[in-house]
Length: 85
Image (cartoon, rainbow, N blue to C red; front, side):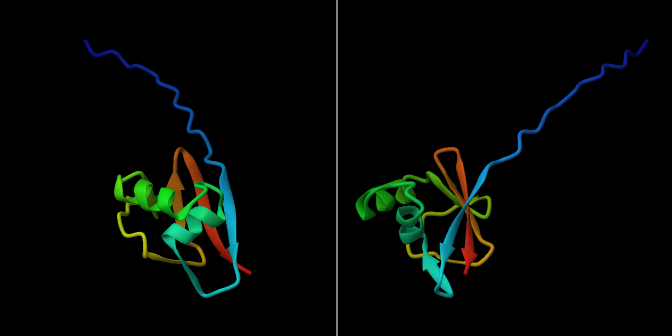
């Protein structure tokens, strides 16, 4: 005899903060600083090299990675989206 089990799953919406830029693109380390996710370039370098940053859902270890309008990155449980003004 098979039992049917009902499961309710709540998916939390992620709160995405916008990082506004006026240039065509921005380096990942600069985006981390601009968004105030980190306070220094050295900190940005360390968290990127320690596999703590994701770009568009994938771990990124390139601090010079170019991000442009629509790209998303996440760090420390927070989500950010690049928006060109």
